[in-house]
Amino acid sequence: MNAPSDMSMKTDEVLRVELEVFRRQHRDLDEAIAALEEKGTADQLTVKRLKKQKLRLKDIIAMLEDRLTPDIIA
Image (tube, rainbow, N blue to C red):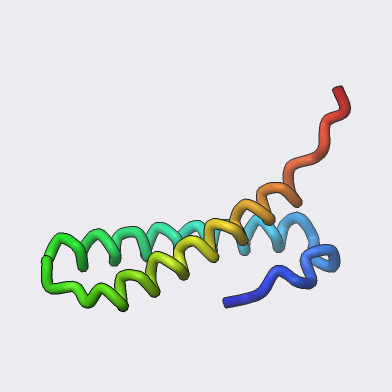
C-alpha cells in the first residue's frame, strides 16, 4: 500500500486517482469480509486482519479527502 507520507509533493489530480484506488480497495475488502462471514467458515484471525486493513484504508481515504477539500473561512 502506498503510504501518504509524501502527499504534499503530489498534485491534486494524482491524489484524486489514489483516492479512487483506495476507495475501490476499501470496497473490495468490505465485500471479501462479508463473503467470508456469510460462509460461516471464516477464520476469525483472517477476518480481523482484513478489518484492520480496511480501517487503515479508511484513515488514508479521510486524509486524502481532507487534503483535497479546501478550507473555507467562515
